[in-house]
Image 1 (cartoon, rainbow, N blue to C red):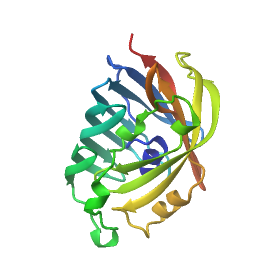
Image 2 (tube, helix red, strand yellow):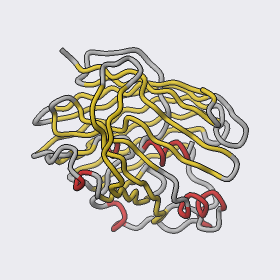
Image 3 (cartoon, rainbow, N blue to C red):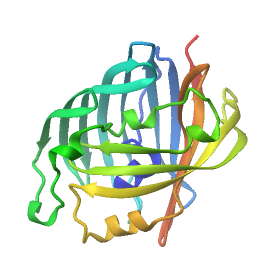
Length: 259
């Protein structure tokens, strides 16, 4: 599930039904070219507030992906294209990890976190300090990128400071190219930004863990960012990651704007 989180910038692949949201995206997840999951992401955003909600599941596929299902919701304020999460709630059940995370935030800082069950092996983890909980986003908010310059290079070049309730990490995006693409339903047809993605663990993780070291060293991660209609935001349309024993691809099949 961590691999999907870093590729997709959100904590799981989701399934569900369309709602009356500003944007509805339906994705498929592929491992080694084989479909192993599908999902949706729904977004509402205006000049004052935003919300994102999702739920779903993934299917086990060797070492790449485990069986998992969950739900997640986030809501907050939108001030001058700056998204400030207020609440983030995650309920996850998988072979790798099961539990809940409830986080309350204010002005970019974490006020309160409840994690059940509590993390284990705390002596092996890099300590999360008070400074690490300031000027951060939750993983789901981080998937909605304010972009007043639209598909300009500058919209790619940024660092996302993320805290998921357990671990603090940075996701670095860098511009690679701009290309034309379309979703299979034909509702999105236009240019996207292609950005490289790199992961930098900050705290809450176990630095000796092999998966953390491999992810931090991985140079193959890539995300395609598409506009949310005429709104000044970008969201992932496609994301990919290659590993020594396989690859992951998340790709939007359906793209639906509210009318």
